[in-house]
Image (cartoon, rainbow, N blue to C red; front, side):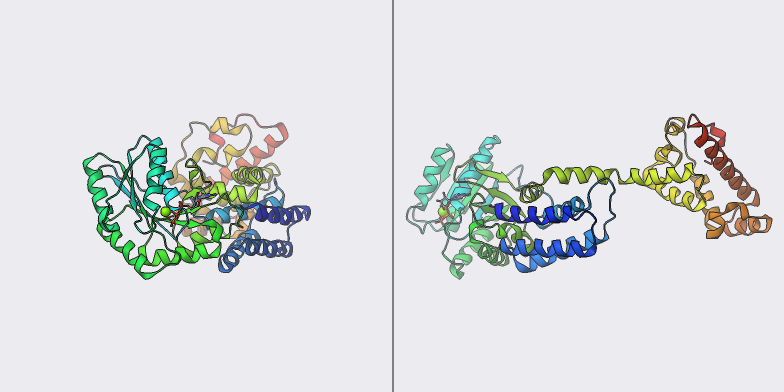
Length: 440
Ligand SMILES: Nc1nc2c(ncn2[C@@H]2O[C@H](COP(=O)(O)OP(=O)(O)OP(=O)(O)O)[C@@H](O)[C@H]2O)c(=O)[nH]1
Ligand SMILES: [Mg+2]
């Protein structure tokens, strides 16, 4: 279904990756093409516009990771935005423990309701649950028979009351289910060519009387933007709880699938991908996004690089340390990091060989706070050049931070000792560091 879109996006990204260095301009150019590709895939124009805007904001502001190509980073951003567009995480169907869970299946004529009802029945059965298929479409002559044939195919029980109206059939079916230890009741409702008031009213009545736990709208992916409009109208009237996208195996351009969540705000819960009754899958936004981009490997690669970005920062610090350029400014920054990372990942722990020496050592929070207060009372110049701090400055810093001059002296002493030690070590190579020499 998304082949064309995938091909287009692949082309855009190929160009971007060829460009090597990313500039605002080539990001913009690439995103213009992404937008075009989305529109060609019949994605709602507002959705396409917002999508591209979101990607642009993130891509332009993104910290460029050195370990990957910038183009790859943009692919990852597009991927993440696609996942968000499709709803973020997978949303499971409702499942009630004590009473039977009731699913009401609705949608336009021919959208795939009856097929979906049977697929749901089979899915429940495979999870060792007892389903009941309810024929609530009394208007199309062969509809009841169609459901029964499908139910028999999967050996699932079905329910129908001749001569009764759909709301009553549904209500009776739920009563029957309660008495007969049914776990899942699936109501197959009637479709209409277009949304008409009478049909909606009947669905509203069924909803009010039966109080289904899930109201699933079957949206035919092949119908493009129409499917999106239909979903919006159904949602307004019925407050549907989930969308089942049907015919995702078709060769339509996929725009409906990409727009429906954003336009309706309703989660896509199921993907129907064929005529066989086993062709039903829970909908996973990340899987579809990866499929559309056709670039799963790059996404994984960038994820790994993202994990390593803290590590890069640590490396930068380490380099500073080795060149003995480390000052109180860096120290403050590291203190902040330390809080985020937890004690063992501390500054000293980042130096090769030192991690082990730190193991088991407790960092005194109070003492850390005191140090931070003292450093914050220094001017930026003093932080960068601590050797300029003389007696009167020490007094000011002590007063400003609510500490004694002695405490300021002690911190400075430790800091200089550390600088010296690191200087020595960088000549000799790192081995164990005597504990008493640590600034904390
Ligand atoms: N390729 C494909 N065909 C499907 C899918 N789901 C349903 N169909 C086909 O679509 C046609 C209509 O499906 P139904 O389940 O009868 O649709 P319906 O919404 O119940 O139709 P009405 O009851 O007439 O409103 C059938 O030929 C199904 O085989 C799907 O996921 N993929
Ligand atoms: Mg039907």
